[in-house]
Image (cartoon, rainbow, N blue to C red; front, side, top):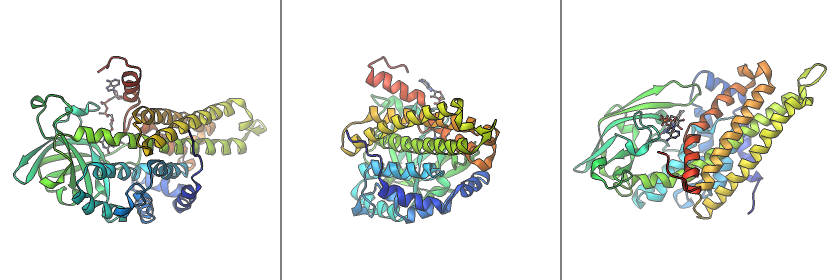
Length: 385
Ligand SMILES: Cc1cc2nc3c(=O)[nH]c(=O)nc-3n(C[C@H](O)[C@H](O)[C@H](O)COP(=O)(O)OP(=O)(O)OC[C@H]3O[C@@H](n4cnc5c(N)ncnc54)[C@H](O)[C@@H]3O)c2cc1C
């Protein structure tokens, strides 16, 4: 297996762009809870968010490996790719399962930045991780579907033109398997919000635009349906490996940021007449976190290589996400400890990144659910739920 580690032809220009949005920018957007509009705009203008869109639809036609390097580099430079990463994997659902007409209609606009597809509404308050129990329904009525229900944690809706919606089209008691009867729709938010869809923002510990959604007889055109009615769960699963790999890369980027910052601080900060980094009590947690990051990174590249080669990579993508999220969290803790009291001061940015990288233990998939996947699907143990 080859483990590419440089990709400097991508890293260098992404880093150059990120330098225009330095720590103060992210600190201010975090403090004022602002969407990093200028940064996302610049990233879109430069074509980076269209990395995965095929060239025939105006994108760069790159693989998941390259896309993951782009997101990793944003986080390594101190930014937060979560403001815009979803476009990369939500677009994949349209690309893989949408009709040619839908692709022609939406992908060029998404590639150029004219249309933003940043939102994906799956999670619901009552169903939680048990996705097949969602209660949002889309019922056919002539040429349209009528949507009713509620979603929670739907991110970036206020900065998106289009949203993928996961809804039940056949009631659970009328399908043979609970994974049947679920469908995916592409909803035009510009028409829906205020006309059947109400968006209520949620305040969170990080600067992440996320919302509760209420659907009250929202009417959407019949051609909003992606693929076949009732097969949405399969489409959802298809997109998960890409999501896991991209998030793993962001975690690696975060982790490297923490280790680099902490090592730099430990070299400079003098206490007891010597740099704190001379103490093994400071060195070892950083060295251990670094080793774990490199191991997670290998798994991320392995999963990406398999994904790009068209090989089933569910196990590798899940393990990459698990290992990378754990490694970035370990690095975050080590960096905070290295900074002592200053780790809590906003001006050092450690506390902001600390909060941001903590999310990856929970979303988009919690660590427990990945462990359950490994136990059941790789170790052959009985399903626990
Ligand atoms: C900032 C943020 C942004 C998000 N953005 C989006 C988005 O854009 N779109 C979207 O659809 N969702 C989004 N989510 C939702 C996210 O994917 C869910 O929060 C996550 O999947 C967990 O679901 P839950 O919060 O309902 O937790 P629950 O399902 O209630 O689980 C709570 C805890 O119990 C554990 N648990 C549950 N069942 C089991 C079990 N059988 N075995 C072991 N442990 C178990 C879980 O691992 C978790 O730690 C976002 C969440 C956050 C916090």
